[in-house]
Length: 130
Length: 130
Image 1 (tube, rainbow over the protein chains, first blue to last red):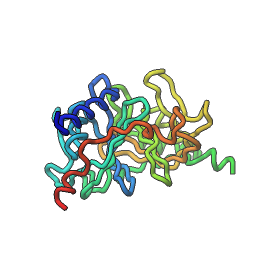
Image 2 (image 1 turned 45 degrees about the horizontal axis):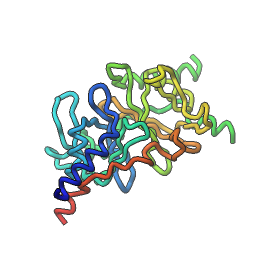
Image 3 (image 1 turned 60 degrees about the vertical axis):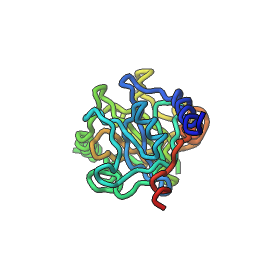
Image 4 (image 1 turned 90 degrees about the horizontal axis):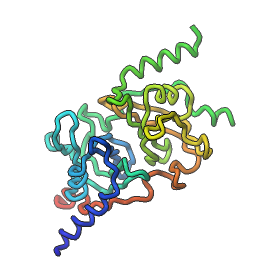
């Protein structure tokens, strides 16, 4: 068996632990590996996750378009995989990346840069205790 | 109108921008405000998000138990709200918190500490280019 076959089998083994939802999807949080900015949240089915773990490029499943897509195929703002971890109940993946350029299609660095929900109460109990 | 009423109305206005899914839920990524660790992913319905934005404590909707829950009510490991931002298409919230103690019910700091998916190819294009 080649190293490539062994590696693909290892990836398949690790993917057995993922708890895909009723639509066959798992939430993928994308985080810049060095600054630790949370860049975006996307969705992966098993094939998108397999491609992510074996190609070096983050691959999503588009629920609205019904197709696979990779950040940067049209914009050039690619997401290069640095790591990937599964959460304790298997239904969320944290993907560590090198993001080239803006992660958001609106041109901002992250998809969370534009819309502050401004909590009315912040860190309340801690202030109450101090 | 009291300040409290005005604040509650402002929160309701901001929540109009949230695109809850078919189950009435939005994904909530929880991030430690200073270290920027991603601690966990949870789910909020409109009421859980309203409580999160108005109480100072992160509140989720448990899909398995069908009830609201706040991290730390039994363990003491509370999540105190520092900020909250909505993503560009309105279907994910990034909540900045002060996490007291471990975020994960398994006792680890984050829910992503235990299960490395070990991508077979890492940062491939960048290496190829250098």
